[in-house]
Structure formats: structure tokens, C-alpha cells
Image (tube, rainbow over all chains, first blue to last red; front, side):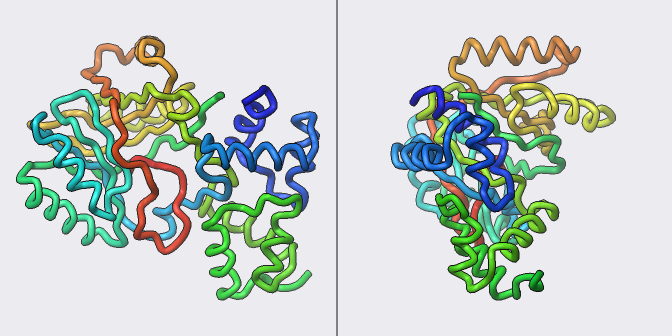
Length: 147
Length: 171
């Protein structure tokens, strides 16, 4: 990755302009050319530095239900429980965090009912009580990683 | 100017966008060809979806770990109910806070009702950044904890979605 790659990533995190020739607009800003920027983008995706380029649809606005949940998993069972969750298609992210509540995961379902059922299923499957922490208010969503 | 896309074309456009935006110099022209529409119609539809908030931007999902952002902290605070909106909005605007949400308390197991995500390259730097932030906003006295993630077991969009999944939003 060189300086142009970095500037391209930082600029694209703010959004590609919604115009006919978006790369021309960006080329002027970044002192490059459309072809060069497209090549760079392609390579960054190929190399796995980026995992997606395109409109980021708000999945909640499109329908669907989500929650953040946590489990306090005994250390000796941690890997096994992680495997159990991994097998569930409703589990979108699962992170180990340093806390008594050490397993944190996001569930996505088409309906609220689906969320309730999945939570119940996880409690039954693991025999562990869980924390269900659905979003009540959004104050900020703006993932930005200056590279 | 032709009228807008038919519902069927709009749906087809959404489906094509699941794979991302075509990486060509005129992406909306390329999409228009695939759904038998013209470039202006596609661009108008995209602008409409954008205005309606269906997507915030045509942007990126970074492999943040591959790019060196391995210190990923969830800051949780116990904010008095009367102050939650004010504190949430203030922290949400603060530099370095990527996500900021209110979530319910679950007493007695869980007392924290404000959740912020901060990503950085080094743990010490993230800790210092958060400490400075809390001091700046006079929030250091509120009960709070920092939960660093040590391992990502699964990182993918929800699979059920009838339409393209967006950036990670942490539920």
C-alpha cells in the first residue's frame, strides 16, 4: 500500500459522489486518473484489504430485526460455545471480549419474533443465561478508519 | 427525461448492487444496461434511495484487522436516564467514536446503557484516547468499562437479508 492507496481508502470511506463519472471527480481530487484509481481499488479488494465496495444499504430500513447479545461462558467451554454459535446463520458477528460477559454477538433475523426464538434457542443450546441488548437509540454510525 | 424505474427494475437494481458497484468509469451506465434502463434513471433512483436514507454512501467495508486496526474497544457507560440523549449525542460527535448507541440496562447483571465503539492500532493508544475523551467531556466520574475484543470468531453480514447487507452496525 502506498500513499495513493491510503488517500483513496480514506476518500472512499466518505462516499463516492453520485454522478455519472464518479472516478473523474475523484481523480481530480486525488491528483490521479480514473483508470489508476479503478486499478488500485480492484487490487485492494483482491488483496483482501477491502471486503466490499458499493452502497451500504441500511439493513434495518430494508426490514429485519437485530440485537446485540452477550454470554458469560466458562473458560473451559468457550471454544465449544463459539462453535455452536458459529453454526447459526442468524449470528452475524461474534467477538470475544475481556469481561465476565466474554462472548458478544450480533443477531440478525427477518422478524422480532425470529430474534426472540433465536435467543431462546441459544439459551437452551448452551444452558447459559444471556443478555439481550437491542439498540434503543442511535447517536452515531460512522465507521471511519484513517489509514 | 424518462419516468423512473419500474418496481421490477428497482428490485433488479438492488440485486445487482449486492455484488457492489461495478468498477468501471460509468458504473450507472453499466447497471442501466443490465436492467434495461438508462443511465439517468439509474442515477435518479440511486439519489432517491440516498435521500431516503436507504444507504448513507457508496463506500467501503474495510478489513480493519488486515489494515492494522486490531485494538477494538467497546466503551460502556452508565449514564443517568435524564442525561442519556445529551451525552449520547456529544460522544457520538466526538472524534474517534465510530458507533454510539443506547441499549437497555439489565439489572442486576448489567448496568451500562451507552455503548461506543472505538478502533485503533494499539491498545495503549485507544485507552489513552478514551480517557482523554471522557475527561474532555467531564464524564470520567460516570461508571464505565472498556471491553477490548481479543478475537473475532465470525465477521460477516447477516445472512437472512433479502437485500444487500451494509456495513457492520453492531446490532
